[in-house]
Image (cartoon, rainbow, N blue to C red; front, side, top):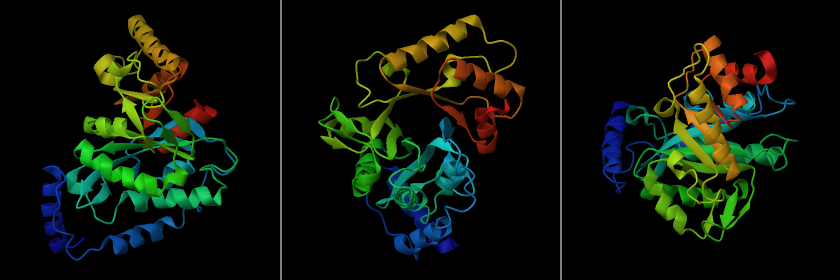
Length: 305
């Protein structure tokens, strides 16, 4: 992106952060030309796929997946069952980035995730991983105001509806499982418009306070929490007995409600402490292990630990 484009883009971003209002289009950059550039790179998604012929790793979650050299594709090459994309609503586009300073109008949700997933599912006979009945979790973290961002996202998900799990009949309705399951995290303002939908192509990422609330897993299938807000143990020495009991109680409570569990902010520096913490999470039956280290978690889950 040249300086002129970036200056205009920052103006657009400022308006979006102020509430998702309409703003000037990207200067000198069309969505179609940007999307094509990224999609061309992703058209090689079959190459270097290390996971072919291997069992996918349902517990592996790629934190901030888009920061890898090949967003989505690197995680899939390691067999991951869940990937995370942060999105920003800017001038009607859903852009993928962690920070506002990293936003690039060519890196849209469609170009990095939805289009590559559509191609892959078509090539694999309706599955993300051919021959395996795994619905890939696409955790979408809303970085701009939840309600307008989700409403724009819902349009995209309907457009790619054949890919996604869907819920019919409101919060307690029936669920049709798809090749990909979108779970909405981030800004909590998304909850109200999601609850109002009669047909949804996404589900809500709950928090610990949602445990035992009676809200069904057909709306909140996942409970996510910051590890450091509940636990002090980081893998050195044995886990305190009280913390182990708390961990197992939380997981059991979620599983009783047919919900899955993920902790973020777990230690992620390779070494014996991380391995010890991951082993404890597996022993407690935590559903997703969170990492930026794709190869490290794959090796751990495939038995190298």
